[in-house]
Image (cartoon, rainbow, N blue to C red; front, side, top):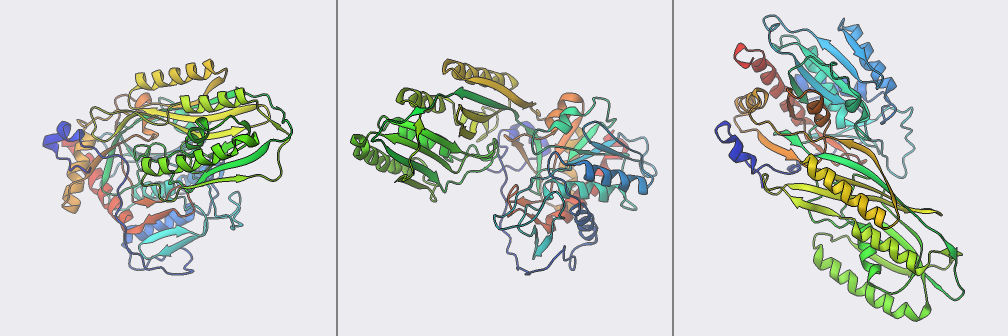
Length: 522
């Protein structure tokens, strides 16, 4: 449900905030083999921003490998005579003086993360450590050649740099903050010193739908669970089978956890947990802790006398799942014998313990928000499951808008794991970003957008996490919003950027920065 937000109905409208993004499909005339951004027909702002983005795309910048892009940013600032500093986390802050008449206005921070998710197609020979991202223009969309585009969040960087040197733009002093490792653990934002910024207002340029302003986000905990396993030789005469589930929609465990999408790890546990006695040989599914697992496989051994019961159970299970998850139209359930059987497996009792542990950990929405309609309050996702020759390893990700509920869920899962004989460790944690609809920044953003486009700026609160949580924690009095141009299929080689939305974001920020420099906005 989408809600139009007006200044006179802020709190009433907060109950109608949307979850996630709603992007209308734009017809795109494909321009084959058009390398680099085709700038013809774009506005002047778009041309300059895309030129900066193309320059950024020449610099390798996978997460945890940001030294080169940090050096590029430092050089960019020094060439323009702008003060710049960095820290032990390779965060970069560029200081941009106010334009004439705006020197007394509160400083505004513009922030984007410099790292990108590095994914490529199976047949691509791209080397992310040395190769530039090759840009391709398809009508109104910009994409890359067989790799992620890196507009998440390279386009946010480009917009910030563009605004810093745009001639004639009336604005307060700016602090351009470029953080590291957002895609992995947000360690750049987490490590930022509490006195690094003097800004009173903070605009994150990492949202993914133009026309929306993000005003809050959930906190999260990533946890690892390790259950020791003891494999033993298989008795003779056992049959070996593989149960594989794939073709699921998957999706982001924050933005799409509410959409009744199946988790393949959990489905397999449900399928076999009510079947027949069996002995686990291997179990693996998922590659990202923040993704709903689309594919999983369990290989197991069983007595020949249980074969017919197994097949009947899996056939019935598939029908049950199709009824429970009607949108999972791509679901494929495959049960087939494995010709090259393994030599070792868990005992039936230890196998049952593995299945029970997986099923005991909550998957999906744990509690719905009472404040925001249609928004999860608390959730959990079993992102990665893997058996080694010595242990079952689970990586899970739980989120909540309530720090207390987040901690309660984490402790409950830790108790569940301990009862099963498993160890737990909290790999990383990021704080909640509480919404502040009374802030001057938010109210000015609503007014500036409507003036620029004669349409309301829509507001959302995300169940996903943003670096804004760390900023809100370090700077409790900072006014914060998040905006950005429209992106689709982020974190995949299909990632693409809607080019017209870039011009709209630039125009919006021109209006907003001008308003924030006026004496009435102080």
